[in-house]
Image 1 (cartoon, rainbow, N blue to C red):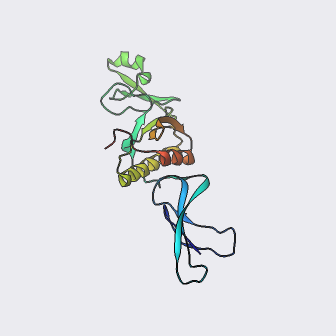
Image 2: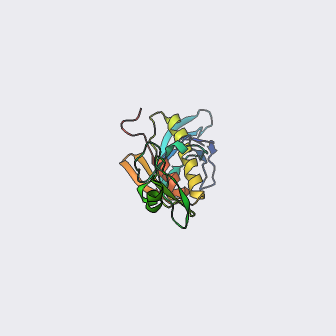
Image 3: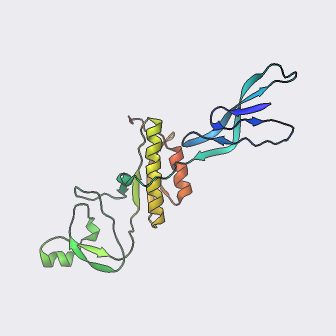
Length: 205
């Protein structure tokens, strides 16, 4: 007998008397897999004519296929609480005061140094020593085209890995089959599972 994966990629497996047998499957793209369809073929009993049938195998637990990270996707980065201004919001820093600088579009009100602003007559912003404290809000809206969606998910995964390695906190906003999901991701595993479950939104092109 021979067992060949049909719904996912993989190598045909000869079925012998050795039980259990291990079938290796290679998912073609990102997603969540709960079943695998295989084709079982045999020439028994005489070995003169092959016949086959497809069989759906239920997995004992879902398989999450996360996107491979690519070091792109910084354009997906958004901060948790947007402030006034035309530019992208700038992170709020905490810790010892390093100095002050003029206000720029996107600076939060919490960073205004009022004493220095009153002295100079212009809005001045605190510069601090420690790492960024506010989490990054990443919005990942996938298109309907599956290849384009996988590329965008890889960009997002790459950006998440970069930010997690830098010690930043991330809030990830995605669309799943059940609806819109906004929740923090604490590590690469949870981020990969979130992006594996992500689908195109109802208004996606």
